[in-house]
Each structure stands twice: as structure tokens, then as C-alpha cells.
Length: 206
Image 1 (cartoon, one colour):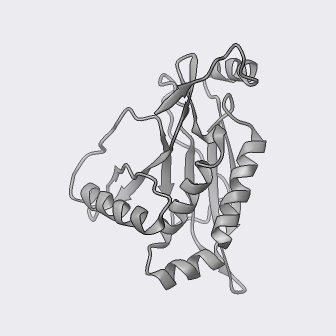
Image 2: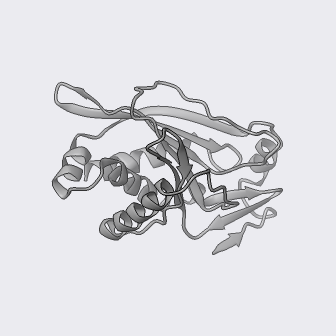
């Protein structure tokens, strides 16, 4: 479900119209998050660390309204819920796009995610869908990156947030991981990205 935003009364209308006219309206930040507690808890629960922090990610974005805005042409909609479209690796070295529904309950979320990951690994191709209430998710666990860019088709007007995670590293007993957050500037500012990062870290801390 979604709600159309009235641009005549929306406080971000001028910002939206300004940045939405750009060929590249996205901006990106990269930060390191502490994963010490989250990694330990995921192992104790027997849960994939990726699915654990993905659940934390979706929990955070579903509590921050700007992450649920989407620009569709010259209009803006607020979606009730946001799910994940995560890249899933295959044994042959390729990947496909998954569509993992958010569930506030971690156990239910993990069960659904495992089923979807299994489906993607049993298929070929990318499975492209014109779905807006998602995050574009990718994990790059081989690289401790400090910056990241995304392949973009500028002829396609996109506003879906893109979140990528890097290599988990250990420093004096503390585990950390870089996370890149790329968002449409017409829909949110650095303030809102900061709110997401703070809440994400709080959820990782348990």
C-alpha cells in the first residue's frame, strides 16, 4: 500500500523538484559500524550474519519515513512497508536478484529469506521487477571499502535507496564493517541518513 504525497503542502516539495531534475540526484556516504555484538548474537542463534544485519537494516528503514518515500515521475509516494532486493550469489559465479519481504519477527524473516535465496540459486538470469517498495541490497564481503559507486542508467528515473556492506574485519577484538548508503537527495538529506545509521548501529548493539 502507498499514499500519494501532496506536493502543494509537502515541506520538501522545493527540494524534491530541484534534485529530481538532476541527471544524478543520488548522494552516498560510507561509514564503519561496530558488529561485535551482532556477529556474536547471530552465531549464538545459528543465524546467517548477513540475514541478521539485513533484518536490522530493514527494521531501521521501516522506522524512518524518508526511506519509504519513492519518486515516480514528478510525483512522490509514501509506502507502508519497505522490503529488500538483495543480490544472491550462485555456484557458477553469477548472481540473481532476490525479493525478500520484511517481517518484524527475526525467525519468520530468516525462514522467508532462506526460501527466497534458495529459489534464486536454483534459477538463471536476473529476475528484474518494476518494484518500488524495496531497498537495493548488495554485500561485498571480500572488500573493506572506503568508497563505493553504483552502475546507473541515467535514462531510468530511479529513487530506490541502495545499501551495500563490505568486509567484516577484526581489530583488537572488535568487529567492524563498512556500509555504503546511497539515497535520492530529493527525498532525504544527510540528517535522515544519519538517523538511519544511528538506529542501525543501535539494533546491531542489541
